[in-house]
Image (cartoon, rainbow, N blue to C red; front, side, top):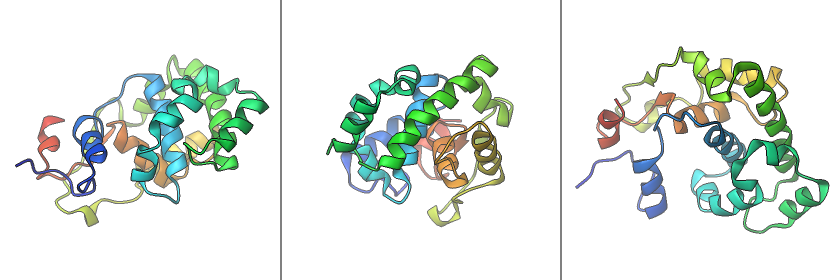
Length: 187
């Protein structure tokens, strides 16, 4: 039997996400765009809700291509707002479009967004040693710094808790519990 972090529960999609994706270090800008968007939509909701709608988000937000998202027309934004397959929060939809433009600006200024985001840790994974879920913080000084930098660059829906979530998802922070089979696998 596999020992994993408890948060996926018995949900097969959550387990697959945990086992194959969460905490794996990301190097591709499009994947960072995906995590920024999805974690912004998660605010106030469960990750399970967002994950189960990811295919629809992928379709609405052009496979998370930041250039195509930044160029979404008012008609596309309204169609997204009417799409029952996603979370239809108008402010979050508009923020995704705005954030994509800001994302492109940061990528241009740093060569890639990936280079920018990894610069906060010098390209190194922060490997925590949590034994129980309640030890894992909702935010840290690292996520505070990332949040501040993104806000200064014009992003919305990038508070410290949201930033910590996408830093975990993108593998900059390894917050698998030490007893989880993925902890050692991700080094």
